[in-house]
Amino acid sequence: MVGRLILTLIALLGLSACAGGISRTEEMGADIAIVGVTIIPMTEGTTTLADHTVLIRAGRISAVGPRDRVVVPAGAHVVQGGNRYLVPGLADAHVHLEYLPDPNVLKLFVANGVTSVRSMDGRPYILDWRRGVNAGIIVGPRIVTAGPIIDGSPPARADNLSVASAAEARAEVARQAAAGYDFIKLYTNLSAEAYAAAINEARQRGLRVAGHIPKAVPLETAMGSQWSIEHLGDFASAVAAPGGPAPPAWARRTLAAPLGESRVAALSRQLASSQVWVVPTMIQQDRWLGSAAEVERWASEPAIRNLPEAVLGQWRRVNGRFAARMDADDWTMLAQARSNRLVVLGALHRAGVKLAVGTDTPNPFVAMGASIHHELASFVAAGLSPQEALKAATVAPARLFGLEEEQGTIEVGKRADLLLLARNPLDDIGHVAVPVGLVLNGRWFSDTDLKALVRDLTLRPDHLAK
Image (cartoon, rainbow, N blue to C red; front, side, top):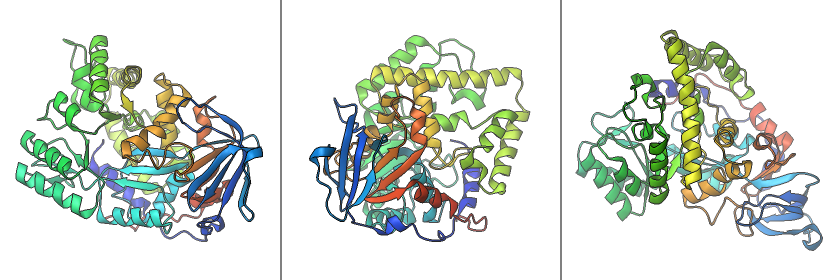
């Protein structure tokens, strides 16, 4: 992930209260019937269920069955499925909410079909948002959140929590457990002793551990200790061809070095055997640096071009400073790094590594909500089928979050987080990017409602995070 200074700029996205309500969102608890739709339930052994009806009551799926066998209750809000497709809501398994102090920013996820997120650097107000979302007071995705990042001394980033000893690490994990955070995130400069203490304390308190692999910790140790490893950068040394030229520092963690085919295969087998989750965050690495043409293409995307000019201007300046130092060989290396990451992701998938879609938003040119669709496209480019990519954004995150009994598939009893699409995403994963309706925790949002979530937001450059 790029420097926190860049991420802090996204605080300019502080948002004022939404002007005007969404009428359907007021119908908390109302029965909803989606009638005659093709369901893609994401359950084992079932691909599609044509001409089915889904009933929703009190925020839960209460019935799923053929249209001619499911009775729609009187007074239910009926959505005609027609020739449309219903999939579980999407999950972004790696986001940063800590620089975005207004909960209205969560609507950007919802507008893009994202109904749950995993927040990777917690704050007390994110716990408040979690409660508000679950109660239906705040319109936003379900939030699973780490506590503040636990790092070593000195910390790799100024706003990480610094612990200098095993005792301090244990105390911080205990504090975060007591505060109600869902999991622990560890970072690069943690000592081996503090790392082991944090892992043990988290286990005793029933908390899972995610994060980077500290420089002092062997890869094999992290595989057996962490629930998830974030990004692909920590695997750079493990997949590089032996004896090859070392890339410059800026490129090392992007996997720019020539790959060793046997080493990629060996790492993939190790990760699959360890059962650790990997969240690759392909889009963050793809967009940390680009040519002038690439930057303008990214900036022209609807989800990016509506950001405050102060944000876009700073992103362009930072990119420009890096780009000015690049020569032809550097640009070739950058392109090779992008190709290498796809090769590694494909190998991890074929080996059976547990993968989940995450974006690392809001890094430069990585937009909240919308960037999940770029990440899905990268999964397909790496060799996953559209169905496998969709699984990595639905079923897989539910398991990663420990919420597989609650979300990820369309089944009776599960929370009603559902995405209605005009076209079949199993034909083209890009069809997921154009929702025509959404059910969020039992509330129906039409296409018009989803567009209004974004249209009615007011960007406030003076609303800065602390």
